[in-house]
Image 1 (cartoon, rainbow, N blue to C red):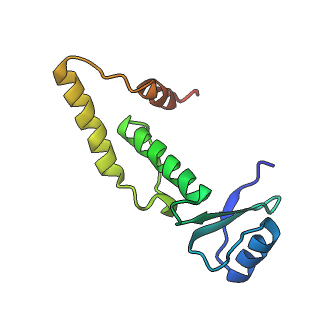
Image 2 (cartoon, rainbow, N blue to C red):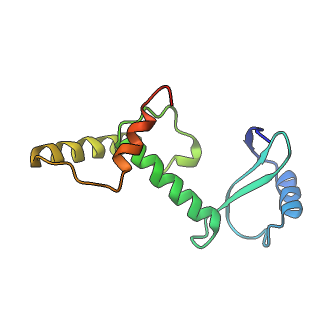
Length: 124
C-alpha cells in the first residue's frame, strides 16, 4: 500500500497486532514490533534463530555489510542495525580492495561487486 513502516512500542497495541496477524506465542522474545501506518499490517522480529524474521534480519545485515564494504554511501544507522559496526565494515572493504590490488587481480564474488557498484549510482 506504500505506507510507512513504524515501530510499535505500546504493549496493548502490540498485542492487537499479534492477535490480528496470528503470532503464535506472545511469550517468545521479540526484538521489535512494527506496523504500516496506512493499512495497519503488522510485522515483528523474533530473536529465535529458527524464525523467518531472524533469517530475514540476518540476510539484511549481510546485505548492509556488503554495501558498507563496497563503499555505498549509507546514511544513518537505525537501531535495528545497532549491532553492525559501520566503520569496521568500511575498513574491511578497503582492506579487501587493497589486498586484491596488491595481488594484481580481483576475485570474483558472483557479481556482488558489480551489484554493489550499481548502488553507488545516484540515478539508479
